[in-house]
Image (cartoon, rainbow, N blue to C red):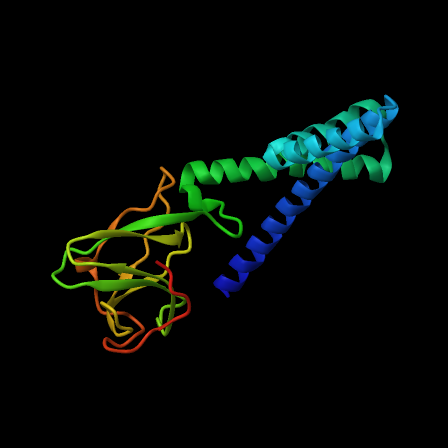
Length: 222
């Protein structure tokens, strides 16, 4: 029940954020086009200005427009009835949603707001054992399948790509084999937006997989 509620809240929140992002981006580009048309710019200049507006929107202009527009409409048009209520709702959402993201990241860390596809980082793996190993990112706790296979020779280090906030499990395989030796918990992104390094010797028996089982590696990775 708790998981279902959490998923529903996340879907609603990210859906609302996407709506604000879409409205802000479309509004900014539309405002740029209307400005050019009012000034009767030639087509090439109007097109270039619209492209610049798209870039500006993707770089954060969507948020600026989404916050300013409803307040500007309330002040300039003095709407009444349903339109007034909708503008107040838009103004409230445009302020509360980004503020919630900032506060959440500040209080709970970067993973408090992690929209898809997430932060693609890399984790440093140190093989402090006497034998070569291969580390893979398990697709689930059973570790029947893994990806991003990363060979780590004895006494060496290697970096493996990892989604910063996914958590989960990494499997340690015998060097050059697909045989499971142990499991490592995946680190999550810290306040410095990095992943803490891990050592092969920290591996423990897997919670949902049998030592000696074979792991199907979907891609060759490193």
